[in-house]
Image (cartoon, rainbow, N blue to C red; front, side, top):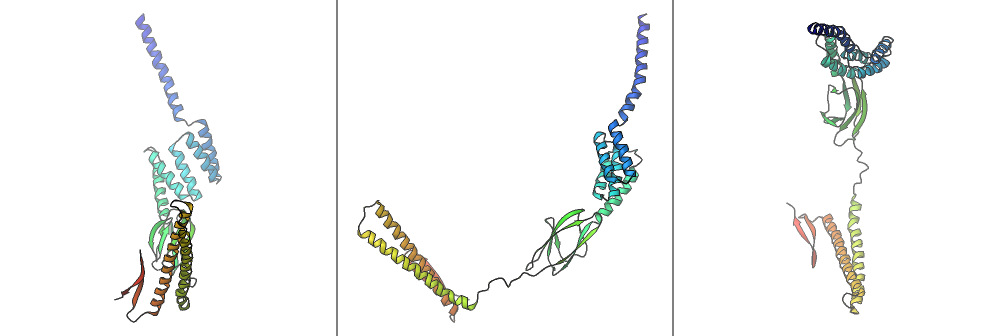
Length: 302
């Protein structure tokens, strides 16, 4: 009796499992209702030629239920929109995630080859004048020297092109390169304007020593005045450490600085004067300064 009841219970359990298991598997394989609705709406938009809407709907469906076949559909929509980079990336992801028995694998592989060949033709052609040996930077990366008969290969999109050549104005521009196309830019490098650079004339060079003489004399006169004030202050013999003594010390320092600086400026003027005259042995006179002396030395050029 007990054995008979146990057999019936086991049979009932197996029967229940056999009835419920296929339904559970079916529910697991079926896409969620929201993803299914988004997919159907995306199909309708794709058939109507509204590829941007189709892409948006299918991306939302993929976020809910990441089925590889949705990626294949997305890649086709990107291709219709001319977005080859997005199509390439989506096809690669599809090929990585799709099962090996997926019928669309061969189609996706062939299409990926076509897209990659098209993207490899994307580039910037630079047609330049006065650019022999000029250096080209694209997005800050050194891409070599001009002239360059072939295109600089780049990814589709916006790029910054800079061209540098010594003695010429630098070139800087931004260009947008469509996928699979070559964008040409015409460049004429302009020579730097050297007329704006001040070139000393003989008259201005000749006047320089006299200007230095005047400036040096003024500084020496200032130092003499300060020295006189110092002597007047020390005549009263102020106590060491007092305000008067400190003031006298500062005046003495200022007098020394003014006298030394004035002498240096005046001697520099003298050197320029002598150099301008250029003695027959072409000696260069160099001012020499040091504690307790002031003068100049001569160096012969060979």
